[in-house]
Amino acid sequence: MKNYIETLNYIHSLGMYSNPPHTDLSKIKYLCGIFGNPQDSYKTVHVAGTNGKGSTVAMLFNIIKELGYKKTGRFISPYIEKFTERISFGESDISEEDIVHYACRIRKTLEEKNISREYMPNEFEFITLLAFLYYKEKDCEIAVIETGLGGMLDPTNIIKAPLASVITSISLDHMQVLGDTVEKIAVYKCGIIKENSKVVLYPFNSDSIKEIVKDKAREKNSDLIMPDVNSLKITEENINFTEFEYKGRVYKTKLLGRHQVYNAVTVIETIYNIFEPVKIKEEDLYRAVYNGIENTFFQSRFEILLKKPLVIFDGAHNISGITALKETIKNLMPDKKIVLLCGMLKDKNPEEILKEICAEPFVYKFIAVPVNSPRSDKPENLRDYALKYCENAEHNYNLKDALKKALGYASEFDDNNNNCEDCAVVCFGSFYFAGDIKNALYK
Image (cartoon, rainbow, N blue to C red; front, side, top):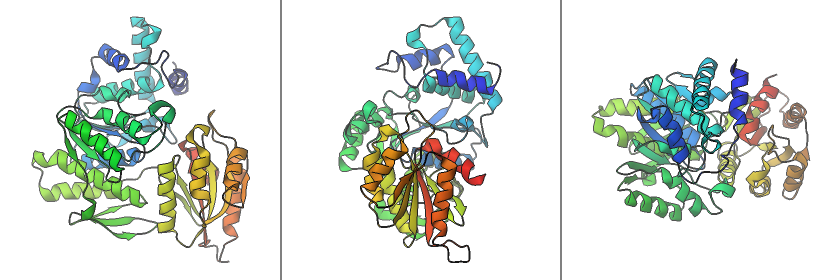
């Protein structure tokens, strides 16, 4: 592989799923064993869930760095604009040169070992191994690791007992792999809970999910911690930030939506339960948590792309995510008319998702666009779903034209001073078209 593009093409050629599929972690254990089990060289915080993983990981990563652990890693999926976003260390993402270097090393070693097809890594296994090896050779102290899919059989689950296993909001998604009920999905997510560890659970999961997590924690002799929502009070929320009080302490987050406050208190409990025994001064710990949360920015989570007119992107692509988006629009933009620009994958149950938002009175227009993925649903299908619940739905195969139309609809509510304060454009659906939206908008 001569360059970065060739390297990415090779990694993507490995495919999303193993063939034949593995029913345990034996393959990733074998692969990591070839490279001396790099995942055992540093401490970890392991994060699983359906929604909120990325934001939770980002806050944890920033707080741990604020505490003085400068050699901290962050592993996420998917990326939004650049593949290198998936692996971060310290203050920057992995370089393209390092992606090439480590990918070539791994590929060459696997070829020299002449491993069978059965043990050839798929794309996610390959990039997970690459991240583990990269962190080891960077002398990483702590890595915050996000699962790719599920938990129990996720390649990241080869890590030993972490400082904490964090389980975020669980809802229906990837049902063809994880199961057709939230309870079945929760069992998979709970697979990251290890013996004699700490488990922190997002507070607004259903009672049935809480019981499953409690049972798993008890089975593994692990401490279960849940945020005390009775000690939480939101003191101010607007389009720029949310301020809240938790257990007598004030915090501020620029991640918008009340669900992000609930993610934040999950993070707060995680940090206090990991680092309180380390004897860090109370004020130093609080300052690190405050700064880490306030300074966290995570792309495509109710991200403001333009202020006049107001254009927002949110990666809501399942029922839980779209419910959170709907409530955030109501809370932060109660008087605005909304133009929805939507692109979705056909395996995400788009009709149910559009039913959840398109029937809302705030919807002024709906425009469906394609996503740059072979799994994209046809824009006309999305339009037809939307027409069942709102009057003004259309589709467009050209993203730039669709965005121009959306901005034009927004300007219909202009107050003649170019403030466009009565209407907003909300782009949502698959993370796969976030980068395309930004490119189209800024160009």
